Length: 494
Image 1: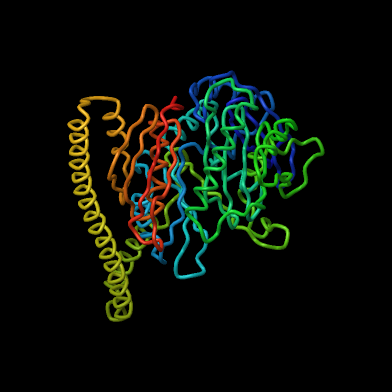
Image 2: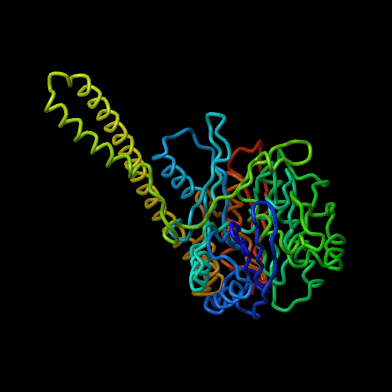
């Protein structure tokens, strides 16, 4: 029945949604409900029961288990776009990792890195890099493996939504029972993605609207402050997706709460008349991961980039044979055969000997290049360790000063300061701290606005405060230092 077809799988907190495609044609779709609490805020808390539900779904619907394309929640994932010069393939991976270590506010040993080249027409290549929490991905892969499913592709849910919406400029709001996903699309590329968890379980949708409104305003402000030359217009359309997107009353509440126009979701392709587009938007985006930029053209003929990095780490699947790993044995065998031939026919082998020497010189140059990268990396590690030691000493001095001035000892303020200083990114320095009964204000200087944004994001992930927001006190001609004030509100901390 499903010969030549593939399955897209989207696991949400309320249910598991599948879509079976053959080429660009939909064969079937459906859901299976999940018990409350198995998945919370995008995290699988009981992988065995989830895998049992997945297995039951595939048995009941007789779905093929090969070539499955699965989604993954975007919670705690970090995206960056790097501009890198043209490098040899063996140096590009190292350069991306080096930039990610400098720019991402999360240790690299806690995330899986995936990347995709967006353009290479100019001297500088734009690289889309995504960091996915290892525990989040490992848990989903484990649950699918228990159901005898080893997905061919795992794609982030926000990226799938971008392909489903297929617009050059857009705001996407994905509405599920316990989460909101907010995605800002600029130039067809996702530049901001946030997963917002409901403040408390069991809230009716109407009570979650103020939180959605605040988080959307904060996301737009964050984007506009980072890209003042290309701010979001008030006419930027909003597209609603998710389980509640097909609920007319829920959509009316959102439309009444926001200022931007809400437009109807219209993914490329043909769909059955009774197909719930909002609920299966992620599945549609997963199915479109292989579409070309020509097929992704929006009205007017503009071709959009297809951002679809596979976040599946190789250790969960079949590792392809590396061209480099094949090259060296082949070169070695070729040299052995060439030397044997030259030994037999030494009088006629001068040309081959010269060619072989040239190849060896080229290999030695590549080795020298790799050694230079290793040396630079080692120096960078030493500098980082020295900087860490300096920051540790500075933190201890600040904590000691605060304890003496306020006569607090091991108080809640001291604990807050330890956590706040523990996630302090490079390029940011604190100059003063104030505390009230429900708020802590951190004042400092930064080398650039993006460093402040990284600090705000790190404070949010630390769950130290219920809400965190930043204001800029002074900034002249965009020259450092940038003076900022970050306010952490403890009143909403969970």
